Image (tube, rainbow, N blue to C red):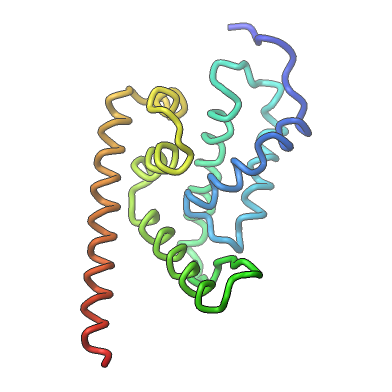
Length: 180
């Protein structure tokens, strides 16, 4: 299929999709400390491959596929070396009280930890559907899987996420009873 027109300029792609790439990498499990480098890696790939982009999928779909591969490489690299836990990598708002900052930090840590418990296929579908609010048909195109596979993975990811959250809540309430 011939390209639909001239390839977009890197600066335009960067400007329009930087936030999406950043969010996607973070949600795909890239720790905050490696996030800037991972975003840089995504856009290096984009720079090299942009002339080859044929427009068979949306630019956002193409970028997410690159982000998935980069996040897998980062996570694989980190698993081979001792590293600090993601729990220490949460940004807070300057206006929030210390209690609010601590609560937000715990919630983000829990969300990241629960996302990381999902296998890569389910995590990608969950992120795209629940957090990015993309329709299943677009996710199917993006991940190059059948539509019913998207629905199946999403259903399984929701169940796993909810079960893990319930376990965490039960664990927290059990601990709370024994503290006093």
